[in-house]
Image (tube, rainbow, N blue to C red; front, side, top):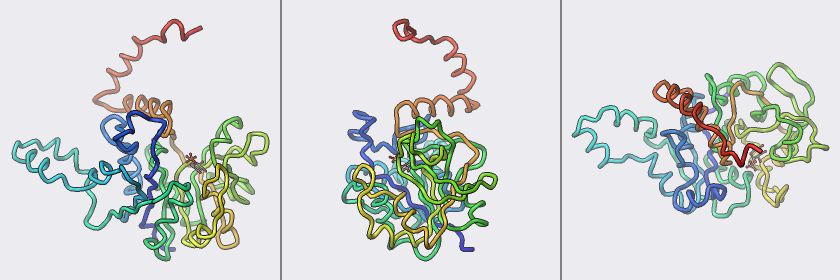
Length: 295
Ligand code: G1P
């Protein structure tokens, strides 16, 4: 089976939930400890063997594009001053020559529309999609786990996690046919179903391995839930070409598209850092909820 070498990163979102911070800073550049959010998704993709990175971007995302560019003046200054640690910290932000392509999603018509922009860059091989808002913490990257499982299963594969039934309306949800370890063979998916009609509680998290046949489905896709072009609907429409499976990854997912999730991710990553964890845990021990909030 062909190798998965390309990944699409939808990064056109406005990040309105983080205003005013995102008024002039792209949400993908908000720092989780000392790395911008996008770095986590790029690192996970690299670990899974991705060599070509396709950002589906939008106006006002200049800082994100600059981040993966060479910072000649900065690097020269650091070199001259012998600041090797600082130089090394820049390493993950370097892209191999020609490895990054930035596309523009002219209109915000949904996730399906974002992925559709990459059509001419994806050849005949399956490719990955990573939503940088979903940060997944664990010893083995979620996409690496999926790539491994995909070798046996093929088709379209989405990352999933079990969620409380009350939460199904925030996610794409699998219609499960049969479970085989971490792999859920599915009849399809439903985008953001009400809890009482959700076909399961296996919710889609922002990691996908897709077959290129998806582009024909995305081309004639009509608006779905929320009036948006939904990737979920395109996957369903492609079921006659490719099966769909969910892969329940091992790891902890943080919804960094929400303030609550971002704060939790910050705490979880801080606790794990050898240079921060102990002090941070001790600090949190000293903190209490304000009295008016404990009632
Ligand atoms: C998107 C997908 C949804 C998926 C979610 C994961 O929704 O449409 O199927 O469950 O990402 O984060 P969004 O959160 O962008 O509305």
